[in-house]
Image (cartoon, rainbow, N blue to C red; front, top):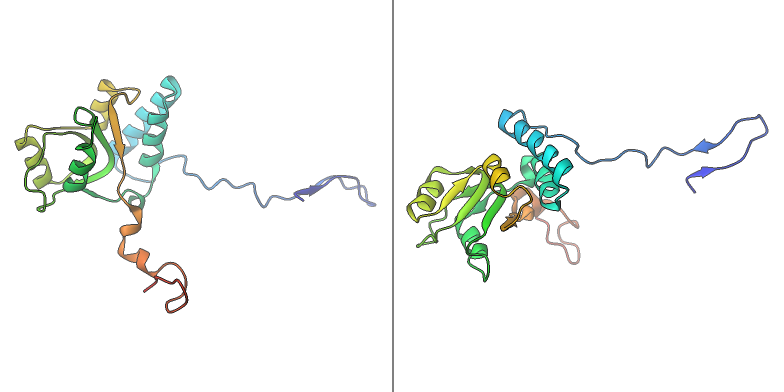
Length: 175
């Protein structure tokens, strides 16, 4: 029970439990990067004015720590964007797109990301693709129409191997 209602013998009122009051959700970006700060300002405005869920998701991911915005390889982006009905869509990734030498032919893609590595950028542009920033995306698709939102796996960090049940116990995968 969260609180007890009634007046006690000494005349005290309701005894409220404050255990569940704290909300552990980020309301702003911790990043000191002025570009990220401006993007947060822009997408806060878009969330308020458009009401589109797409903008809400982008804003939430801009607030995230870097460990929750892992990089995605060019090969994986190409794999996702090569699916049926996604050829003409804009790939949106709040994070980094990295080069992958295992991908021999890069298909022409439209990509919007926070950061694209030098080699990945060169390969995308050489293939006839397009790279845009989030402010350019806000002008082109303010409600996220004709876009495909992607996110890399967060559990691929080296540190994740140590989480879980104790090593050696049943069903444990910890290192």
